[in-house]
Every structure is written in structure tokens, then in C-alpha cells.
Length: 333
Image (cartoon, rainbow, N blue to C red):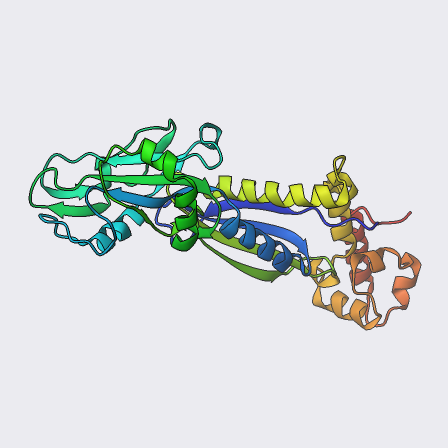
């Protein structure tokens, strides 16, 4: 098979990131035509839907049977409190959290006034942390009137509250054993597991010496606190490669079978280099163009003794061309 040009990539801060390490741009250049969109669509879908994260699926509040219950001495209603809790970002080590394991956070607030996510404590799982500790949850006018537990699990993508209701029914016994509250319903909520907030991409054609059109892909992504763009991209690539390995039985895949070596790539790029990029005089360029010579490879294969037959190509121009061929190692003895 014909080998592809070796690609290059790097990850840099986004222009509007303002030193935000969770907003980066993945740049991949040297892609053959069409590969930019192909890679972008696949990576975006996986980044948004298949990166595992952790999120709440239900909340239990002492004495509250449904989200429309009013609590005395609490400024916010239950719907607002639930909405505020969804803003809490959590990070976890997946090696310490099992599938379908339920993690409990308790609200410990023995003072009045402003209650934030800093008052939330993980009670039954190591390596689970609240990342943004300044999220305002509620405002109390009396200490201890809000007793709350939030239950989380690991997952992918988005799960609506109806599906979470079914999960609560399945796990009701376990939830009651975990809970320290005497009464109150387990109120289901939507779960947004994905740690990736947004993914956008742009594909541009590169001006290169090659006759083939090459593309550059810029994939901009923003992640939640605790999950870096680099780790999200790495995991997305692992997921994609794992699928292709299964489909194509690629356990012994060697990238050298697909991509040219750096030397081959450079040699091919030079062979395809357009005459206009050789920094020849305009007179020499025009004369060669009228003779149908457009690339360095075509010029190198043209007999030196026949250069004098090209119209408007004088002795100085011929000497210039010979020097240039020698410079690129294309001069034939």
C-alpha cells in the first residue's frame, strides 16, 4: 500500500483560555485530504459521550418527600438547591471506584448564613474529591436546619432523572443502609457524567510544497476541573483504537506500515516541491513554466544539455538552475 505522510501533533492553550489549563487545542498537521473531518467527528463523539466521569443521581434531604417541599429557615426552595448541587464538580480515581458503586456525600453545616460545596464531605470512598468548593448551595437563617445527603456513581454521557428513578428502585435497600437520615425521599436528578464540557474543531488546508493537499485539524476542548484535556484526548484515542483492533485484528499493528519515515516524507516533499518555491529568478521560473516543468522532480529528470534549448533561458539562468539542483542533491553527473 502507498504510505501516508507522517503526521505531527501538539497540544497548546486555547487563545481565550486566560491561563485556564482545562481549555486546550489539539493541533494535528500533515493529514491527507479528508482525514481532518474524519478524525474530528470520531474524537468529538467519543469525548462528549464516552469519557467516564462521576455525577450525582439522587439527593436525600431530612423531612423532604419531593422537590416542591418548602423548608423553614432556608431561603432557597428544593428545586434551586438541587440545581446548585449539580454545579458541584467532583474528581475521582477510577481504580478506587467500582462499577455501580454508590458514593455518599454529606452536608455538614452547623452554622447559619451561606452554605457552600466546601461543607460537603465524602463519607464512603477514597480518592473522591470536591473540586470547586465555593459553589453556593443554600442560605440558612438557623444552624442545622438543612440536613442533606447526595449520592453519586460513575458513568458515561447523560442519564435523565427517569432512568435514575429506576436505578434508585433497584438500589433502594443499599441507599437506605448508606443513609444516616431518618426520613425523606430519595429524589432523582439528571446525571451529566461527561467531564468534557465542549468540543469544537476547524480544518484548514495547508500551503506545502507537496502536490497533495494536506490539512491541519484544530480540535478545541474544555474539560471540567480535575480532568485535563490531555488525559481526555488520550482516553478517547484508546477507546477508538480498541474498537479498530477488535474489528481489524490489529494486535500487531506497526505504524511504519502506514506512515512514511521522516526521511521518506522529506524526500517526497522535496520531489513534489513546486518550482516557484526554489527561489529562482522570475526569468528562470517563467521559462521553465512555459516548458511544462512545474516541480523539482520534473526539473531533475530534465537533461542538463537540453536546458539551452528552452526559450528565454540564458546561460546565467542555466547556471542558477544547476546550482539549485546541486543544492538539493538532484544534479545528475
